[in-house]
Image 1 (cartoon, one colour):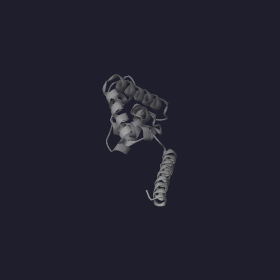
Image 2 (image 1 turned 120 degrees about the horizontal axis):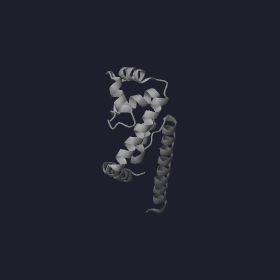
Image 3 (image 1 turned 60 degrees about the horizontal axis):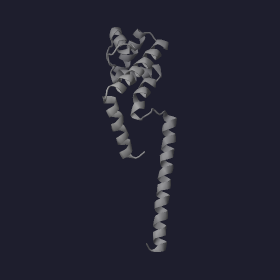
Image 4 (image 1 turned 90 degrees about the vertical axis):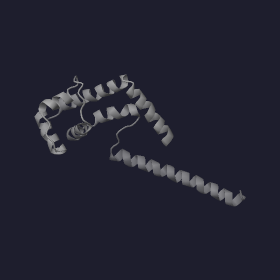
Length: 142
């Protein structure tokens, strides 16, 4: 995707998010996913608070944690806490849910390597086309 098209897609997605309805739905989906992941995890909320403190370097009270992570509460979870929780729980679906309406997706190391191979292949094709055009120019004098 060209940079110009990518920027246009991002601007459209951001305008949709700012209109309210989509933003609310996206946040609700991410919050619901996170609440489900926490509920199914092997950790208690207190254990998660301890792990967050170790990762983030600041204490998080269980009542604050509950307010941030219950799917019915509208309190906004700080981004660093969301990333840390996804890391602790080894489940990044809430972040993926936030990225999807913007036209982006998470990629693991394998997918990143495949994308890089694709970019290199495209670069090769573009270079080959440039080389071919230069050779034709030499041969035909144009």
